[in-house]
Each structure stands twice: as C-alpha cells, then as structure tokens.
Length: 323
Image (cartoon, rainbow, N blue to C red; front, side):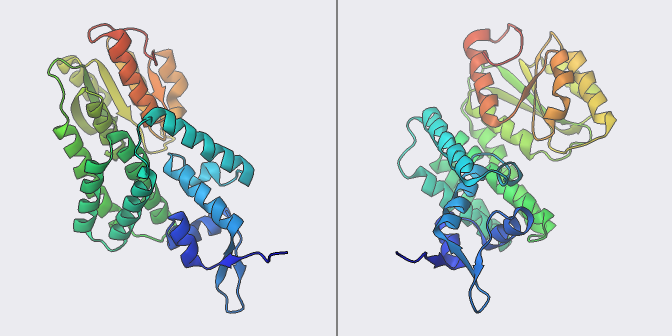
C-alpha cells in the first residue's frame, strides 16, 4: 500500500493560489483543514487537504465569501465548484483556454503588491488585467475577490488599514477608467448610480457603473453617501432609465431602511430601482412592495440590463425584474 504523501506550506501555496496569511486565517477561524505537524513543528498537508483548499479558493473567486462555503463537506463543495465552472463556461462560451490560470496569476500579483504597499506594481497589474480580460471576468474573478480577501485580512489582523486603503485607491482608479473609456452610443439607456446616506464605501457602486458601461449603458455617477432627498432630486433632474443603489455595510440602523423606503416610494412607477450589495437582502421585502428589484450579484445585474434593452425599450417603464 502506497503511503500517503504530505506536503509543506510552500507546496500548498503554489498549488492553490492562496497566500500563507489567508490560509492561516481560514484554519484559525473556520478550521477548513487540520494539517499534521512534522517533528520540527512544520505544518504538513495531505493531497485531500490541498484539493479541498483549492476548491474553497475557487468558490471564493467565483463570488462567495469564505463564511458561506467553509461549512460545506468536501463532496458538497466539490459539486458546487463543478456547477460554478459549468455555469461560467455557459456564460462566457468563448473564454480562452488558460484564462483561469492567468486570472489567478494576476490575483496573486495584486495581493503581493498590496502586501508590499507597492501601489505602482498594483496599478500595473490591474491595468494589464483590464487589457487582457473582459469586464465580467475582470470584476467577478479578480477585483471582487481581491477586495474580499483584503477586507477579511484587515478584519483578522494580517493586514493593516493602510494596505486596504492603498488597494482601494488603485481599484477606484481602474473602475473609473473602465467607465470613462467604454464606447457607448449617445442614445443608449441611462443608469444613475449612488449609495445612500451612511454608505460611504463607493467601490461596489463603481463596479456596478463599470458593468453597466461595458453593457453599453450610459452611466451617471451621483457619488456616495447621498440623502434620499438628494437622490430623488437627481432622478427628477436627469430622468435616468434606471437607478442603481449599492449597499455594502450591514446596518441595523432604522434610518437606512427609512431612507431606502423614501427612495423606493419616490421612484415607483417612474424609474427602475435596482438595489444590490451585501446588505441589500435585509431590505428586499420592503423594496419589493414598492416595485424595486433586489439583485444578488453582478451577473444578475448584467442580465437585468440586457433584458431591459432587449424587451423593455428605453422609454418604457415596465414591471422591474429580469426579463
């Protein structure tokens, strides 16, 4: 019987694409694997451990948080990853061979540059990725996972606030450039994008804006942290076809709920209201009562944009939702 092989940490990092700090954080917080110890105290991982860690990393890169997938058993996780891969292939269709490896390499470069506080290298990595990958791949499989990992590592103390801030500045520049450089017809439908009062992080909203521009929509960025009255004034002034609101912070503050309800009431029957982000689900029932649409991810948002252009037409306000 062939003895089971065990591998040191450097092999795990090379084969999974995880960083050492993130792997340690996952082990400590979620007990995703339990490595053996060598006589000298070195952590050792089995082939099954490495495969499981690789599946976890793929699930996170596909858009899930580690908290959502860490509790899955190995068979369930493997099935989920296979379904994601099949769905991604169906959506992309023409994805070049080896693109996943190229995205993973860019991801590792971006993490390493952030760890070094090397903003110039990070900027170069993101710009090269923007030229190499289409916008859905760039945002869903590089930018969003990068921001999630940096946020998690800031929370668990393996990175400092300055690391997240440096990366955020470069990502913001990238997203702004994607919106500004998109080729959009002058008579294309118009999307207004903002975050409500108390929601100061704008990267989620800028990812929405970049996605819309890539889908051929004109985009007007209202800016972050706007009171409901100002959002409604902007809508009344520019008369967009749709208004997208990004909610990142989970908040129990009743004021946010009231602000959103004011916007939902004020836009009902006048403009499509789309609300997304990590905190959106907490307000989904109220939003639905006022005819607004809660979207779970960027791909759902892109589908909505395509459905609107195909079936609704620019000047027709139909019942919001995916066509």
